Image (cartoon, rainbow over all chains, first blue to last red; front, side, top):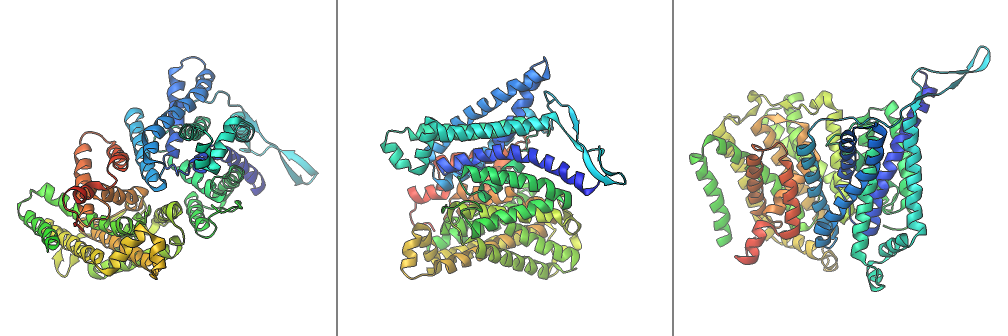
Length: 308
Length: 310
């Protein structure tokens, strides 16, 4: 393949990464924005979503699409409920102290990861996509007879990947509408702006916190379910999304939703394109260094305007 | 006086154990002492100065690889390789301190985490030099320090004890010196310390370099004593371990890191016989500790038994 079609392919793959990443990172960003809690266990919620999707899909014996649809609904609910329980038993008792919650969520990370290892085992397991038609893409080339359309081998995508992108866009719009247009969002934003004042106005801050933590985890789990037909479910799969979500949330500005989405698209696309030219390890090294340096020299993020 | 009696007493006890312990526990204790030195370095920053780093594996690995690569590729003998490891640790911690100390709180934690991750990935990336995940073995011939063969059980234990004793006494002296008092004051109220005219940044910088160098000393010794250098020592897990040990033993106490390391080491050692998911214990310990005993074991001793324990 030549460079042009190659770049298109990388962009398409990058868009899938970006879509899933945006969902995960928005969950992390919500939790940080409203609760001021850095949730190190966020990647494990993503992993739980994927593992639960496998478990649900294989226990439903009928058509794979039914199992997958069920997983799409049930996995985020289960993970969200788990997160609410973790919030009420652990984070609430720590009084949401930023440093102690980080240590506690590191503990939570190991607990979830290792319990999954004990229950699910160390294997990577696939889930069948509900629909998976290959779509070849044309490419235009300037040949001897002027412009002509060719179908380069390997240039294409699947209907499922496009559906993932569409689902992510729809979900992000739903989250935005929830935050900006509903009473629940209003209460969340009030809690984010001033916890004490919200409490004084009779907002049940603790319940809002539990809900936000559950919602953030559910979004990560949903992203996990969406990715599992493309990438297999494995008990260690939470590490990469956690790192990338951190990168996205920090570059997009801590706690800002539009910045997070923009950064997710940027990182997701560049991740696909950079790994065409560099080794993935080098790309990761550069990305982690970038996050560290952004935090040191521009703590409000690249797109954030207000001070963190 | 009582304070010195306690700490010298512990060292004497460890020396006595050298002659009576069965081989298996003898080897374990040598390992624990080296790792406890790492934890003590961590404790200087976290326990005494209130700087929570999530990237200490970077310093441990800097020492380990400084030593290991010196032996492997520069053909150094053990003593200069150890010094190279220490220098590497000091330089790396100095650079990271200059950058990360511009931030505070949660941002400081994430910055240290990110740089440590970049360090870990670099070890993998330069696999041609470091052999990546697989790591490399330090040959027995390279583990001779002034004619003493460090690969022998007895010598290894005594060398670990020497490292541990040095770090312990250094910490004890440091936290009781005026410098150490300022560190504690920074932990308690940074603004007030600044107002009193102390240079807060200089103190934090000094303690971070000291802490990183101590971690590097532990890393270099670990590689030399146990003869293996690998990428897993640079991973996030090895940044979390000292935090766990120090929290368990008691942050801001001199003996806490050793007690925490000893306790956790045997807990994991016993449980790994039962299950492969031994990190589960580490997770549960972290959550339970932050919930119920944020002061750790020695912290409880300080609260209930002896208020003056350093």
